[in-house]
Length: 282
Image 1 (tube, one colour):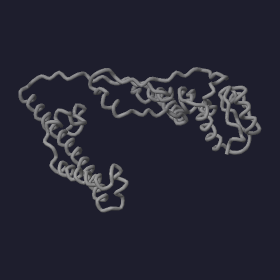
Image 2 (image 1 turned 60 degrees about the vertical axis):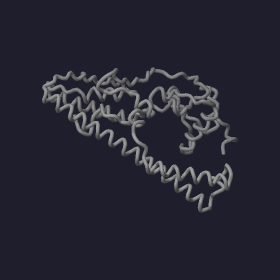
Image 3 (image 1 turned 180 degrees about the horizontal axis):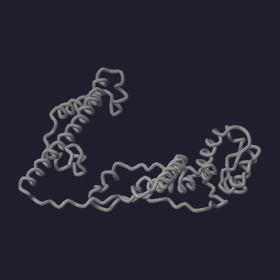
Image 4 (image 1 turned 90 degrees about the vertical axis):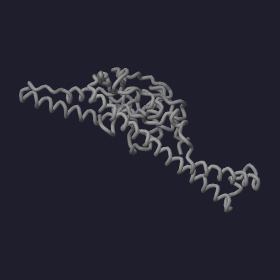
């Protein structure tokens, strides 16, 4: 196991360890000075002493103390975390050496490879090609596989995945890759057709964007006004001229509208999405 990379190494200092540590004397002194100055400013300027003391020497001293406390607290937390991790690596290193010297048999948990299901089928196809390590291929099959890989890369480059933002809580609560159930990234269903009649809070441009996943294309906004603002931003990026309906059904038919008014009327009457009238667009 590496001395700097160990999935078992703690990322934070436990509360019981933190509670058993003596207080930082520098931080205690700064907080005492802050409390005394705070009481003095309250006596002079009342409860709104923060605003009332702006421009005064005492007010600037109070704000400087706050900055010093924040800096000392951050430095102390970083040093505490670094020392706690260093102590872990030192201790675990000695334990591993002791097990080797005493010839203790340790049963390590089997590594469970996480099951990954991609949002886009092109990425899954590319994974199958790149992970195929077959050696019994003739020259013709090797060339065909390379061509297939290039075609799949080109197709994947045209698609767009939805970014998944994970909170710190979910990261800290997730299990280690050495144990527990494997993580599964669900694959979005991709039906063959899109309904012509859409929901009133769907974006007609997002529905026709084949670079994105099905869930992203069929998403709805919380309010019609938010959808209308979103559509107007799409329209601002379009060059003047004829307007193409982005719905997959209309796109296959090659439907073109002569102006923006006809385009919005078509989207409302055919697809059920009412857009903002031109007289209300600034």
